[in-house]
Length: 420
Image (cartoon, rainbow, N blue to C red; front, side, top):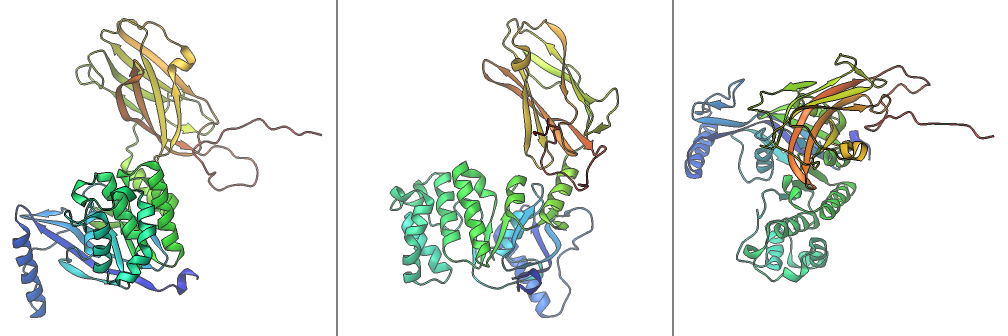
């Protein structure tokens, strides 16, 4: 079915959500009743204005400010943004856990949500009993739940604990059961928060595959994650929330690129005072920069020198290794380079030291990159400087008829030859 023929299943219209700082939910409920009563009588909202810049206004905090969008059946909508942007609040409003202060939400169909770990579970009931409880809350008959029970238990992978009270479950077990219940009780709309980060890699793959299956059956998924590769691989569209407002709504790749582009401050050099430099009492990194013949302009055809200055405070042996981890703006590891694999081990002089790693030309694709530095001793991480540098690689001269962006983080020029 083409996108213009699909019906709208979620319509969010100018939604605001206000919280009062430092008060209990009972006071907040009273405020909601007061607001509702004012609306019914045609009077202005007694609460304060939402403001235009700051989310905080007096004793109030606006978690959502004028959010509007539509979602069609079969969409997998990614919801991204920094911590505190309003993502979880929006999901709670969509899940009818809390009402909006202003605005309106229209949803069509049965909604199943997996938000905070343990939400919707009764701690005194067993896993099996909670499956039936959740199904009943969604309006399902016992026979319908019976038909789904084996699939839920098998997907969760905790069949041996089904008759154990939920209060004895680990966080990972709660997540497994929660997602299995949410995805298998035939929801028309599936809402999933960041809780998937708790599961192991194999379970995450199962969850992502299950969400794809839900969408391919014509149902709708809203997915919140800080993992941009997961969002890009799963979602057909993305929304970026910023300080409670909708910053961008569009194709997943475009929204993720702009979001990470703003998050990643381009910084091709950092220098620290020795007393404040990252590191330990053994060794500290006091300076790092990326350079191309003295400039900070990098082309795909450029070599990039990563110059590091460190101070060896008291290491007297040869056991110090340095790794560079280069990630794309979409948080995918492009490559890792290990110093000792090239130079081997050798004593480090006490005091100032300088080391250079050169990224060869025709290696990186055009785009943004972030570079982290890992110092290792005795086979373990000694300390880690996350995103020590961030830089852009620009498109260079290109031959042939392909003028769009090449896919992938790397774009090496490999050897080709014809055989006759």
